[in-house]
Image (tube, rainbow, N blue to C red; front, side, top):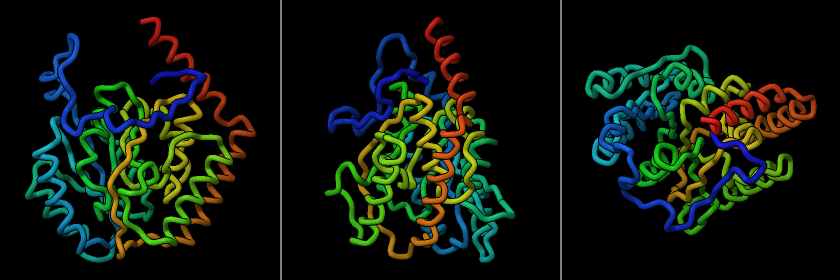
Amino acid sequence: MHMSDSTTSVRPSDQSLPAGFAQHTGSLDWHHMQQQTLVNVTTPVFNEETRLQGSIPKLHEFLSKHCRFKFEIVIADNASTDRTLEIARLFSEAYPAARVVHLDQKGRGLAVKQVWSESQADVLSYMDVDLSTDLAAFPPLIEALVSRGFDVAIGSRLLKPSLITRGFKREFISRSYNLLIKLFFHTRFSDAQCGFKAITREASSGLLPLVEDNEWFMDTELLILAEKLGYRIFDLPVRWVDDSDSRVKIWRTARGDLSGLARVQRNFAMGKYKFAISNELRRSELREER
């Protein structure tokens, strides 16, 4: 992680990351890195027996062709009551790189936190099961962490609106919510809610213990804390198509998000994160000394 008083959220230009893989630079042994680096791809699901059957084979095929690192696909089942768990287990038998984690309690944030906390991967990521985000954005998302020194990488639907297909209501709610985040916390990352994110294991170990939310607000809370603690965030414009069969309860989720924003703001006001901030400053100083 890189600590500084300057802006931590970085928006790439069209030319800042190639669509392909990073080039060999300096004395780094990229072949060795490919063999050693493990990338986790977590997909949280609740009653997704239909979409799961199409998305996991598509995801596995894409990663096999385009991810230059070893990878694991983790299907995180949130107490599904349909055949989701059964189907997920069939995929884990069919694909050696896939496995299933079952939770008896619902909560997308809970699922992501549990899988990330237990994984031994060097890079941890998650994406929504509907694969609304174009998978072509995944390699540059991971390269930002592995090759360019970023700590967190996020897909953004707001940097290039021309790439996005969705209705007016969801567009308005999304932009209003992200504006509220900026008003509350003066953050610079562009899109808190896109279900397409990655983080280094080191950053995850420092941030996840601070994240209280177990629902949809989890990744917003993670991003706010990451930026405020000085982690470098890579903001990547993505191509995204709205899923008309989305299970997100918009107004219920909005209430939870507003409550979460107020809670995190209170935590900052009460100095709850001071210890974490001082710890990260010390770690940064030690890395710079090396």
